[in-house]
Image (tube, rainbow, N blue to C red):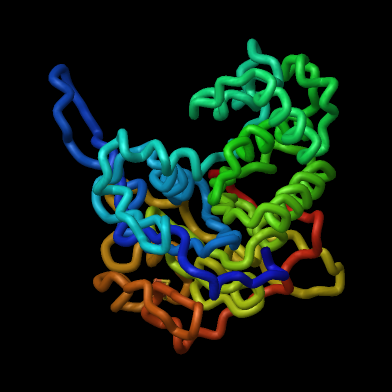
Length: 354
Ligand code: SF4
């Protein structure tokens, strides 16, 4: 995480030109009349042992990127390559059966600790489920592993025969984390893992995720609408808008010196932790456009206060403007955008929900 700056480690997973289009079907014969371009040409890399924050408003496509990386959805186009035995293998070219090994090595922590745990299953069965699916049969071994996992996430082993309703939201999320850890994954997709929790509990869960990463060295793709939360856990951040990535940077650089106008607007919406800090909130006009018919040129141009003629006709490429920094904006070199100090631990509150 931020103190370990592991982005110089080998790439664990790399997505290139990733697209996911969902058909829009109408009429008696369910004719396809268009496509929702939920993810429309995403490039990103996750390094071994790092946390990549993926942020954006509702409808930006960030959750769909997470599902594609888990291979829970088929890609429309593009590749996802994953490092195993020292080389990157193309997951999109593998048949579903051959993905079994990959599925042992990646897992997910869901947003909602209430709906993501089956109320009819005990904690033991919930946490043991991945072990059983992947062929562990010895019940003694399973119980021992579950005991160990519950201790790791700060839950009492005596509670393993209870049902989810007996636990608070924070405890349920710990159960979800224990389940995600069961197979010792190399990558965990954390899909808004604290956004359903009280602010006081959020910091505890974020600290737990950091401690587990230090202990086991797995990478996180940390998906959130909340830039304040993302700053506490990420080494790098990628900002999504309408199915594309508009900026990636190390966390400190992205917050203090944003290079894309959308990032600047998101940062301006974070509540101030220092009452003396003067800054003006940038209110974006209108809503996020319909991903079935995105605007031409720069997708952000109808809401961008810096837009010029070129922005309405030419698509800005995501390009490297400094080592480790990429931005998709025609004017990245000439704009002087306003950043903030990364929020202090425990705070949160940027708007939107994804
Ligand atoms: Fe704004 Fe133009 Fe940059 Fe898009 S390319 S973010 S419209 S300045």
